[in-house]
Each structure stands twice: as structure tokens, then as C-alpha cells.
Image 1: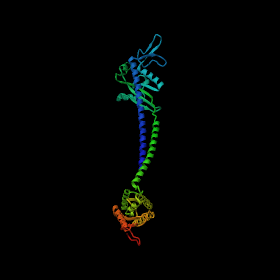
Image 2: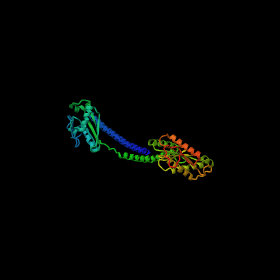
Image 3: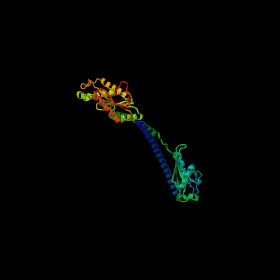
Image 4: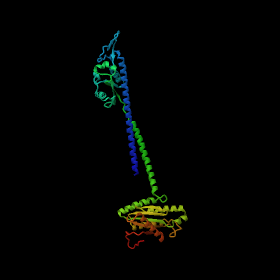
Length: 411
């Protein structure tokens, strides 16, 4: 189950890193878009300011040249002036000046200005589909600006805002029916938008994700091992390294419920070291602890089936749980346990039954017809009988399900 926790942690970490990548890319793209909008507004305001300056002056006269020819769409009697030296000057009104600035900017900085209107005087100022839609939104919806990103060829940002008719504009546009405050057109600004570079974000997050992944796996395994050690410490007796009383109680309860469901036999063997108090008095508690460790190892080695367990019941007492085991089978195992302990030849001068440490055992079997506590009481009573009868022996509690073998008498 704890491996699932590590897996869940890894998946959560990867989702977190992925979410961070998406969020950072989104933020960078949002910042780039905001910067494009600000640049578009700045260019538009600059053009509007220059146009206003031109309009307030009533236009500017410049020499006619190869690049600047008289504006054929400017209806003004003073459009062209010839000087005494023969030089011809032509008036540059705001609209013509906007076109000239746009042409110059497009050549040098890849920035395009386009003055346009739904009712243009100059055919070159006809709005393209996007500009026409923007102009309609200005007039019908009252929008103050419109922008878009076109990725058809190179990523291009297009910005457009309306031109509001001023008093100085009526000289040229009054004939079209415009009044002060009317939207008579707009200026679109187009320039290359810098592509968002996302590979540094992806690479950095990949490194962070990999480092975190390695850390989660490493520390997850360390933590899992720590949990395993803690679990073992909580389940095993620190001295004898067999299961402790707490684990035994839980295990017996589970196996007893299983026995009741399946109507199968469940046996326990309660073991007690004979004259162990005397052993401690003669040899000391340190030797007593060493003896208990040897006894625990011997009991654990004797019990071989996966479902059978040995636990320290308390002090010098041990208990063995034998699922699916009849009284006869439990009796045979108890005798084997008792014989193996005696074969250890642990010297015990204070014993009155042997010169070595011996074991008394009480066996009890249930088939789900009694409570687990009653099963323990029966094993304890059988152990008491073994201790009173002479020690170093096995006594079985009465089992109504027991089928006696020929010549076998029930203890």
C-alpha cells in the first residue's frame, strides 16, 4: 500500500510540474501579448499626435521630388506653390503624411501604418476585411480599439484604433458629411510579434521534475524502509524477535473470525518455561534474557507453515497460533516444540524436573463455537494442569470435535 503512496506522490509531482510549465508559458505569452498591445497603442498615439500637429498648422509644404509628388486627392487651391527660384512645393496634409510615414517605416523597421476608412477618398486607403470589421465595431459597438495576432506567415500583430473627427479635419472631410466627434476611419499598425521562446521553460522544468522525481523515489524508498522497520518494531518483541502480544491479539482475532466463517479448527499452544524465576535468581537476568532469545529462535524454527505464528505472551510465556489445525495436530507440534527446547541443553541447576531448561505446554482447539477469549482460557487451564501435574509435558483441553486415535486417551 505504501508503494501506492509513492506512486501517487510521483504522479502528483509530475502534474504539478506540468501545471507549472503550462502556467509559466501562459504567463509569458500573456506578457508578450500585453507588450504587443502597448507597442501598438504607442505607435498609434504617435501617428495621431503628428497628424494633429500637421492639421493645426494647416498642412506642411515640402519640395516636390521623385519620392514626394503632389497629392491628387487633396482638393486645395493652394496645394502647390512655385517659388521664384523655380522650386515647386506641395502641401502634405495629415492623411498624405500618414501614408508617407507608413511607407518609410515599412522599409526600415518592418512596421506598417495604414490609414483607412469605410468611405475612403483615396482608393489605396480601402480597408481590408479585418480593418473593415474593426471599423464596423468602432461605429456600431463603440469599441475603442481592436487587435489580433496573425500567424499565417510570420507571427504578426495588428492593432487598430479609430480616428475621431476634429474641427481641423472638417476642411477636407466636411464634404463627406462628417461632423466633429464622428469616427471617420482608423489607423492600423502592423509589426512582427516576437515568438514566445518556451524551450528554456520546458528544459528547466524537465530538470526540476527529474530532480524531484529522483528525490521522491529515493526518499520514498527510505521512508518506506523506515515504515517497514517501525512496523516490524511494533509487531515483534524486541528481546526474542518473535511476534509481540499486541500482534498476537490482532492475529488471533482475525483467525478466530476466519475459523468461525469456515467452521475450521483453530488451535493455540500456550508455553511456559519451567522454574524460570529460579533460573533468573541463579544465573541473573542477563542470562535469563539470553535463554529467552534462544527459546524464541527455537520456537520460530519449529513452526514452519506460513499461517502459523509464534508470539511472546508475556514474561517467560510464549503462544503459538495454528490455523486449520486439529487437537491431534496441535498436540504433535507441541510435543515437537517441547522436545526441541529440551534438546537445546540450556543448563538449569535450579530445575526440579531436569538439569536443563524445559517447557510446559497447554493446547486448546476451537471450531468457531466459542469466543477467542474462551479459547485462551482453555489453553491456560491446560497449561496450569501441565504445570501442576509435573511440568515438562503437554496437556490438551477437552475438544468435543476431537476424534481419538486407537489407544489414545484424552488429557
